[in-house]
Amino acid sequence: MIKLKNKQYFSLINYLTATCLFFLFFSCNNKHNTIDNTLVFRYNEHKNIGSLDPAFAKDNADIWAVNQLFNGLVQMDSNLNVKPSIAKNWSISKDALTYSFTLRDNVYFHKHKLFGKDSTRTVKALDFEYSFNRLIDKEIASSGRWVLNKVEHFYAENDSTFNIKLKQPFPAFLGLLTMKYCSVVPKEIVEHYGTEFRANPIGTGPFKFKRWEENIKLVFRKNNNYFEKDSNGNSLPYLEAIAITFLPDKQSEFLQFIQGNLDFLNSLDASYQDDILTSKGELRSKYKSAVNMIRGPYLNTEYLGFYMDSEIPEIQSEYIRKAVNYGFDRKKMMTYLRNGIGIPANGGFIPKGLPGYNAEIGYSFNPEKAKTLINLFKKETGNNTPEITITTTSNYLNFCEYIQRELQKIGLIVNIDVIPASTLKSAKANGKLDFFRASWVADYPDAQNYLSLYYSKNFAPNGPNYTHFKNENFNTWYSQSFTETNNKAREILYTKLDSLIMQEAPIVPLYYDEVVRFTRQDVRNLGINPINMLDLKQVSKANIH
Image 1: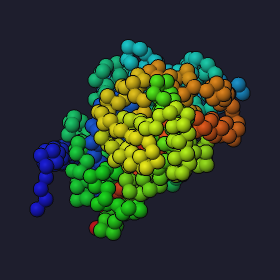
Image 2: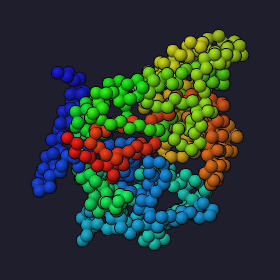
Image 3: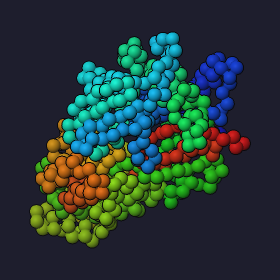
Image 4: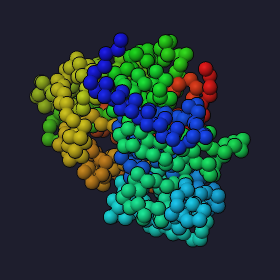
């Protein structure tokens, strides 16, 4: 008999309630068309979902759901290539400032009575004009407003042509347009619902909204009018429905997955990682008959950051910053603390999987060199007991304790301060932490996004430069990267910029994360990608029982 903690017990009660609602809903609405469970994809979202309006698709939970309901001009494939979506093709002017998109004529919004006689209509260029205007409307306060910061203006030339003019060349712009913020929405529906469009979404995606019992269950149904087809000309999607539950407890989520009540489990949690994986990051034999594991690079760099404007001598010292980088074994850390999931960060800040990444420009474990640097600091300052404090959250305490033990072996006293995630986020942005744990997940798949954290005009709190790193050469080269249109030359420039950061060591890269997905054996074509996007339009489930 399994004993459950109160939190787990109530999580399971919520799950059972959600399951009953789900089957009751489908049995009441589909008396002559009962949905086969092999056509329903079930997953859990422990962080909940805040909005189904793409203008507010900021967090992964929201982005995943919105991705099933909406489309934009372009989309990104699993190799980070920009591909057509509602725009069937596009052209870019010679000065790299004007983008002209030609729209498909067979993309329909999900059915709604407000569309009138046909209950739907095709997407026009004016719909994109309206959708983009929503992003920059200060009254709407979209979290995606920044995506259009480099745009001078945009307009519908006619029903099928949408034009965007930039203020300056920006090679990564097409990648930005793949973000869910840039999805098309219908004016008449949005203006009817107002702020309640968040819970009454109408898009063009492979699935359409059906029902949302907040904190319990969210249901999408197949969009039979979807415009995309597979490589054999078959209509997408294959699934009939998506069912999302909201169990807040990750161990309960894991139990539901193992019992076959969920089809998909994303990422690892300390509560079950040793149960499902070996120390080498392989699936344990007891699960191999029922579970598949897929893993690959994730555009997420986990790191420690030094606040370069700190008045503490140890933080100001390049000797200490480099000693920390040399002073612990990243590979050993990943083996023991992450079951081998993740890539030891011996390169720079740009993660593996992006052009510009170079595995040779960072630091490897070298305790003797670290000790030498500590001794140079002692000799130069007369301080024989150098000391630093790492501020972190409880989720990363084990990493910081490992680093603490290793650095104390080389003569550096390390304290750890554990604070809530919200407090750390605020203090980091306002320059109140001298040495802190952080991570950066790509907003868009271009190394420029990572390098923006070291551009001096982006000093926090007005930008993402939390370390207050400043280097004039860096600023010059970073600005140059915006006008460099040759991909290979831009990649070389990115590596040069990353190398410059590592020479001054305002950060300690820990590891480049990996996407880890577990599915039931009957799930087909889920795939994996470096931005960890959940795309279900080509997923199917096979009856293997």
